[in-house]
Length: 117
Image (cartoon, rainbow, N blue to C red):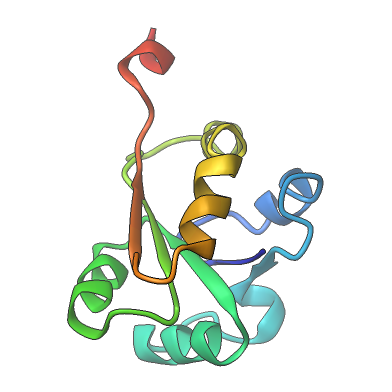
């Protein structure tokens, strides 16, 4: 499964997620930094990526357009790169099932109350 990380996420996540999500890319690496959300959306759709973002605009595009691409929306606030990596890795099976589901367009991930302790 290929993840495309939006610019609101650190490019350092690519290497941190390599074991769990080996085909992860960041918008910086493919020349999409600063491009409109619709350009990022189209690139993800055209190249088979699951788009990962904290940006509510992608959640809304998911409602309006459906998929592809599928969107993983992170509701994690101002979190460290490590916390975001942990959230994605802890939900690897959930993300894989979501990516394989022919109907689902949006997966919302948030840390559990237990993680906050």
